View 1 (cartoon, rainbow over the protein chains, first blue to last red):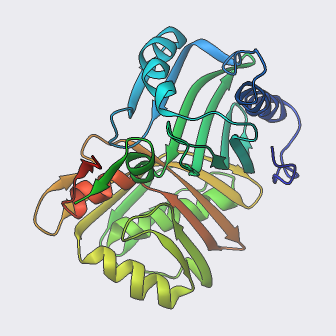
View 2 (view 1 turned 180 degrees about the vertical axis):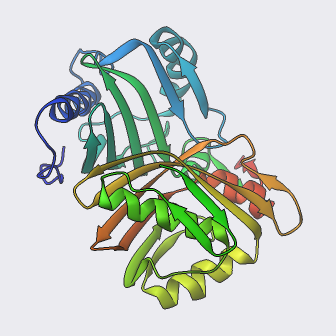
Length: 153
Length: 152
């Protein structure tokens, strides 16, 4: 993960606690992508609202981790590559109370190893130490071409 | 925070966060269609995420108006921006927005009101940076009438 993220101005208290939860998610995600046997979504609430923006076959809203795991990740995981160093690199945090926005760059690959490096606006609602809403906003047009191996006509 | 747009009259109620107030006023100006760019610093940088015809980094009012604005006007007849949520850390504001409108050939886009993210940088009473994360596949499909076709 990047160590140069902009968090200097974030207040202590609830905001800082929310940021800590989100930072843990990023750390868990990178560890999992590097092969460590842990659930990268352990900071997500059981009743999380999970939103992937865009018009791709995997865009939509899922309610609850059970649905996220069974309905989203079972479709998404086979389309993605795995390699050490892949994950989301945080660029900037903007946070207030239980809401955290993160600008991030992704390093990834598709199922056949072609690079898939997207740019993200990620939104987290945090309550009682758990992420209750996650919105993944990114260049879904790039996902169409890199992940779903389509072109524009 | 209340907002009323009636002609050129904008009523924006203060929130206690000067940075958020500037963003709310800017959005009200965008919706008023008055073409008022006074809340953008002359050296503001607008970045539209992605790989669409509208995407890119536009430094300065001349490029923002001359390239981004005019390119958008070629495909968008009316544009409506609604603020769902604003949060701020100092002079940086993150927004969840609903961006919708009507294309030049009369078709609505994002009538469902899906959210997109945006970051604003505030300097004094003006905006000096905007980073917008629009639904890029919707831009290609709805605004440019393109479609995604399997490579093989």
